[in-house]
Image 1 (cartoon, rainbow, N blue to C red):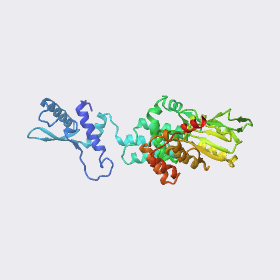
Image 2 (image 1 turned 90 degrees about the vertical axis):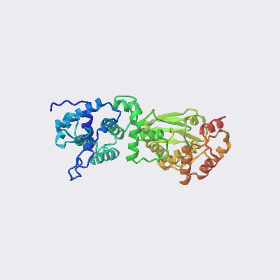
Image 3 (image 1 turned 120 degrees about the horizontal axis):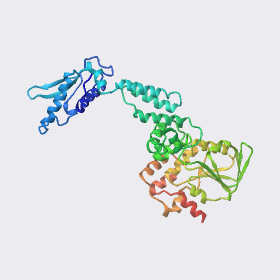
Image 4 (image 1 turned 60 degrees about the vertical axis):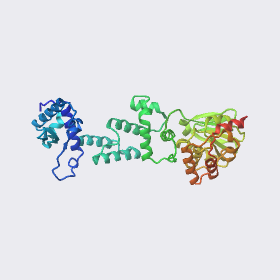
Length: 408
């Protein structure tokens, strides 16, 4: 068809197609002969306003008459005033309308999207769960969760992350998949992590965590790191590697081991009576005890680090195992997840009511989220005395003040 559409004609025809594509007839659910129409006000809000310039109204009417003459629409006109009451789609002209608007049938577009998601099935159960949900939505005439261009990036990121077996930095992942070092962090990290959390089965309970903490843990489960990850040791330790080499660690000669070489360690011999994992690096650097080995694992612990702790416990299960962290709900969630993830009966050290009372002047008040978390831990029966004290006295304490004052 040689008809050249102007802006108002395109707007009207597009609106009519939107009505048609949103109908039961379009979805094949309606046996009746359904008609599709819009009022002029849908595209020209001031059309029937007494104050609208009559020249604009006349021009719009002329445009609509042209569409009717070309058998694209039918007009329902109030003859007494020559006002258009409604514009009715001519269903027989649908192919021409799609062609004139250079618009693809939404069914065809949805079928293309379905095919895209089907191409990612069978790779990983998390990715498969997400794809099947999108296929179900599209098959039931609903839009997918994300626009196609965004979805394509999400699918490639998920494929890369979920099949990854070696440490990779977030910016390396971003440039490898998105050709931009910062785009993953700015636009895709939260989306990808929500999908993994929704369809995955993480060993740790992260439901009460802040968003950034959640995302860090989720990504580290698949070796995606914001910064290089290390395990820090200090104390009397011997680390033996698969190649036969042995590294001796002393209290005055600490060592940091990259998480990438965890699998290369055959065993670790602890020449002491207790192990203390430490939540924060500043506290790890300050605290000392000749009869203890201190290990800094960087807050919440991913699967690789938990696996390492299990290996460590296997050869050293006669020693006492402790954890030193902040005396706040987050610190106890870290402890709870550490126990659940390793199966090791860690006991808190320097994290009780005694410390809250002794260092009272350094305490901070609880935030709303702290109260929620403390209540949840108390209700779960996890160190109820500490949770009750924090809630009753509206207090929490960071571990750095304890390790600092103990070192003086």
